[in-house]
Length: 204
Image (tube, one colour):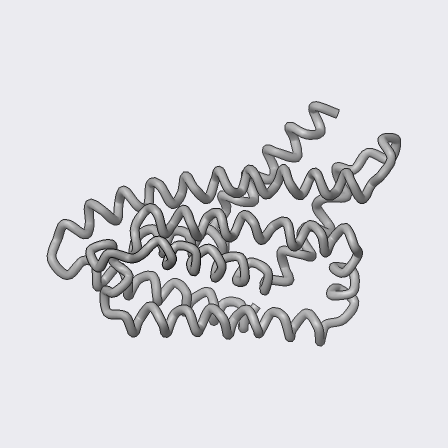
C-alpha cells in the first residue's frame, strides 16, 4: 500500500510538472504580477483539483466522456474565459506589475479566477476519472472514499509544485523588473500566454 502511494505521488508530481495550462498560467502570473500573485494562482489551480475529484467520484466525468457536446461546451467556455483574461492583461499596459501596488483583494480575485479556470477544463476531470481508480485497492473497501483521498493528495502535491514555480518565477520577475519598461513587457508576455492557451484549447 505504501509503495502504491509513493508511485501515485511520483506520477502525480510528474504530471503536475509537465508544461500545461495550469502551471503556465502560474508562471505568467508570477512573472507579470509578482510572487504573491503567482502563489495565489498556484493555490487556486490546486484547489480546483478538488472539484474534479468530486466529479470523478460522483461519476459525472463518465457523462462528459460519453457526451462530446457537453465536453465541447465546457472546453469552449474555458477557452473563452482564458481569452477574456488575455484581453484584460494586455489592456492593462503594465498595470499588473508589483510597482503599481496591487491590493490583497486582487490576490483573492486571482485565486478565484484560477479556481474557475481549472474547473472549466474538462480534460482534468477525465484525467482524474482514468488516473485515480488505478490506485484504488479493491480489498480496502469504500472505493469512493479512496478516490477522494487520492484526489486530496494530488491537490496537495499540486499546491507545492505550483507554489515552487510561482516562487522562482517571481524571483526572476523581480530581477527583470529592475530594468525600465520590463514590467510592461512581462504583462504582455502573460497576456500572450493566456491567448496561446485559449487557442490551444480550441484547436485540440
